[in-house]
Length: 317
Ligand code: NAD
Image (cartoon, helix red, strand yellow):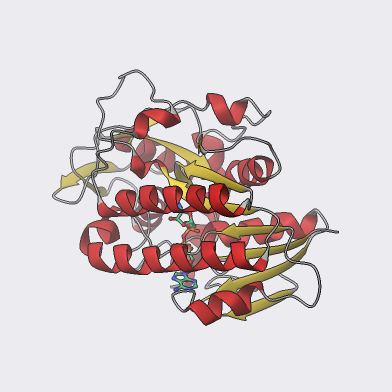
């Protein structure tokens, strides 16, 4: 039985990852600064710790015997574009602290494998249809936001610890991830959850606000595919950053249309000013696909797995 630590277990992807690892028979310790907002944790043990504190990182990693077989580091101060633009300083300070202190503490504790959750925000702004970038092409770097710069720093930090301490490190660059049990209101929600909420609140024929003209292109990865990719990558021999994303590109207008279809409503997009982020990011999934991973949940199916939960939350107030 593997002994596993998940940092950020009170969050969206971390909560799903704990569930997956439990289903596989692992013994899981979850750590987060807060409890999960939407459901009880499936972890065997859940510690409330602030990982900006070096002693809290040591406590998270402390065991009675052998060090953890796997440490998944997903804790971060993060949110959708609205939050990323409004909280640049908090993001850079909090995430740099969490990542520096947790990576060092994991190496000192002798963690047998360490996973870091990076983001495709490390890539520059691109035009839709530009050739897909490989992981190495993130450098020379020009991310359009500070969240992406911190992720690049934290990737390098993790790789430096791997070189200097021998702790095996795996790094994934996540594409936009969505699914049930994620933030859907309050300012940190991402586009899929925000549009599900707005459509759930709308009456048939209503206008629904979108930020910008709706032409920005993204790929959206369902959380079931994401957690599958995370665990496969962790247990593979693939070193260095690895993109994980669904190969289906969609505009914000496509996303809204898909949500409306699943909801059985007709809505009219109403463009308003807002932080749109990059126009597009096109990146290769060849590395993650080389270890047998492939996205299985495409956008409409993923929204079918997400919308009913958000609609239920909206109804419940
Ligand atoms: P989330 O906000 O739902 O989860 C992050 C968790 O980290 C939260 O529960 C939060 O309380 C916790 N946390 C924050 N500060 C902490 C601290 N000081 N100590 C302990 N815990 C702390 O976000 P998520 O969507 O589940 O993202 C998980 C990881 O994946 C993050 O590193 C994020 O940057 C990365 N990522 C996510 C996406 C996405 O689309 N969701 C895309 C790219 C990268």
